[in-house]
Image 1: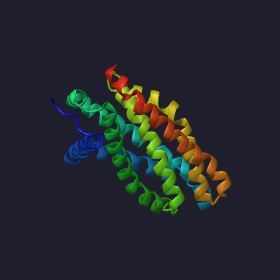
Image 2: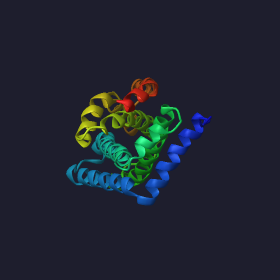
Image 3: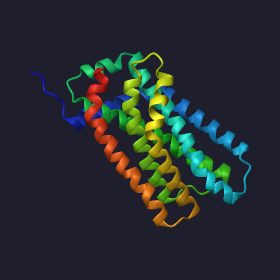
Image 4: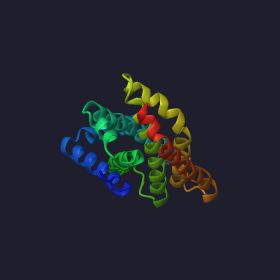
Length: 227
């Protein structure tokens, strides 16, 4: 009788596999970083604004960069699994399918965080804005979890289609609109020094969204990958 690995061990095994494969090839991170740098450079030269106005638009520019880079990473992450036959191997493994989901979420979040760690100081230097605000970093953490949590589930669904590069953004962006709008509003509030009474509603929405959609993904991932 074959024993099933524990949930935590299975999740960490998926994370280790993804991280070791990426650090050998560096395909995913390179694409995300180059795309992010291009976006913030284009915005930097296109938006010749006063310092005060730059603070107001920085939240939107940041989350536009993170959203598109994250979508690129999600698409590439699942496409590599599908093209190399790794996804079928994972699904045949004697582990809980939700462990595969959370392993992919953690590894995709790690890639997203690496990109954000590099983007934030470069953005701060180009725009002359200090982005290392504890409140802003909390918003980036919560927004990234919500975006990647939903995106990993939808990428697992879209990877089965031939038009996966086009299908994922079509499925993803309408669903993550609450995440992006809340993240932009909360980030802008911290950057402009708005009172906490204005920041707390979008921050609470981010937390609730993350809890609800991570629970939905946990319950539905098995059916999604079976289809």
